[in-house]
Image 1: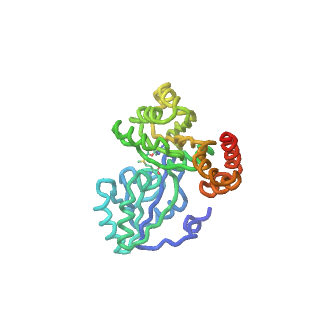
Image 2: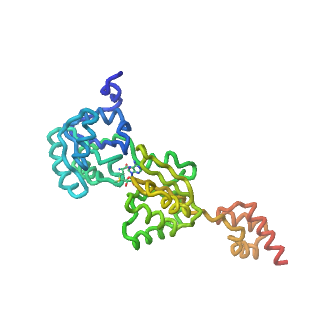
Image 3: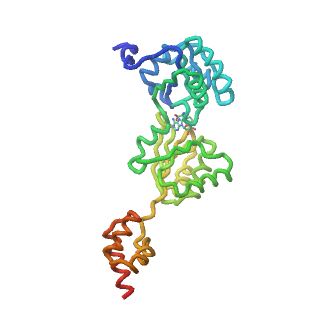
Length: 292
Ligand code: SAM
């Protein structure tokens, strides 16, 4: 087999740079060849949980000095890592699972390193977000990633209320101890007919993908306690878009018809509103007939 260093050579791997490396979200085979190349190349690996990452690296036969960088020490740890970069080291950062910075630490480290003048190089790979979306279907053609909803019921309800008219599919992350209340909160906040994808334990032994509606989500979870275990991505359909009403431009057409012919009124109204001219013409004709 071609060596990793040769396969990965389509890019430079400068010294004194931070490499932000995605790791698997479950199945440890979901690591990229380039991630393995870089993790083997760097002088030091900063990790959200050094024990967890040490075990993962051992499975790949990689052993490197590890530094803890988690949400409670991210800024201070960043300063220490910058000293290593100043000494010319290559440093990698990995979070516990998936892509750093996506509902995970990493963003503050990236800011600090870039502000200190060192390159930050991304290595793409697994993310629960992209994995769930890849099997959702056409209704998620546009989406917004919202991450974890607030844990307190009141704040969660307020957040969901502010999203009630959001036109794009919404992607949420959830942990097992809150999955039941979160799916119920979604069903309470939005119309029950909206589509819901529950993606559970992606890439793991008990992976499950449930497609249904928001209204039936709580019932599906309640039917088997095993369905409430593990890690979850929830994808919810966006708010249905109200079709433009036939009568939306009546007021404008009424004013224009006082001065203009049907054809001219339709032309001016189309220029003002952007609505189709033939539809406005038909409506103007009807208004004129009503008036006669
Ligand atoms: N950085 C990660 C990524 O790129 O997806 C996310 C980290 S966040 C702390 C952890 C959350 O991601 C979990 O609570 C769950 O919502 C989601 N998640 C991670 N792995 C998952 C998996 N294998 N299946 C389903 N959801 C997962």
